[in-house]
Picture 1 (cartoon, rainbow, N blue to C red):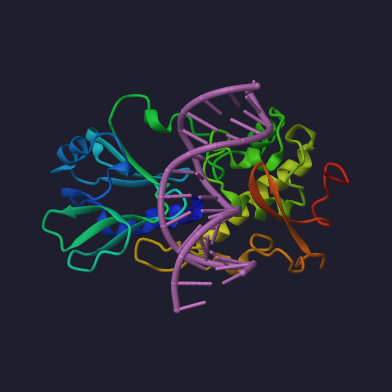
Picture 2: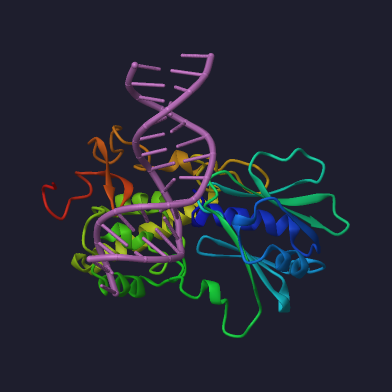
Length: 278
DNA sequence: ACTATCCCCTGACGGC
DNA sequence: TGCCGTCAGGGGATAG
């Protein structure tokens, strides 16, 4: 599941490998991953140069300068890989981008098909397709974060996962930061105190930065643009650790659905909003 | 403005 | 060994 740290890792890798290259074409093997007509993409991309590789939330932005940009959201299992043009295509390769005078291709692979690729012409006032995203967790200040959380009335975990509220946090980092901050995933956002939320803000930033430093978390299928695994899965304290002991207090970590998502937490370190549930 | 539910799709996994 | 049913999961759509 590529979340912010994984996407950041991919973006940094792509920056090293495809920045300044000029697209010579794209082969579309699966229309459904495109938001927009394929003819538009192939015509439009032809001869354009990649002048920036950026991230916004979980989106990868290949900037084509004054012309516009190409956006990639990797969904659950999406990958962007830079590989030699002659190398065998892995299963579920949906898009193959080629470059002028360059021996490598950029390939988009996605077994689950939840990812998508879209493009937009440059216009003033930012990208329309990203305009609804919330602030970046690594850029928002503690006080903004606190007031933003307290202005809503929702369970804290689903709120953290809401990309309109905050852009880039997914299931892994929501669970990890709530554990580090000692907050139960079902606590109502407006019931949390300023000190508690400052702790959450700090935990979130620390964990995201630690994971970026480790090259992301490789659970399931994640690899970076060069095919390398991340290492932050070794730093996870609760995610995927149902039945194991909490490293802080020793109590067994539980898994429970919150807002429709598996949530891993420690009942001692993260006290619930009510002692029972039904 | 928020919640619940469905859908997309495939690999992994359990049962037999 | 293999077939089959079940399910997770990001996010968009839709209904309430």
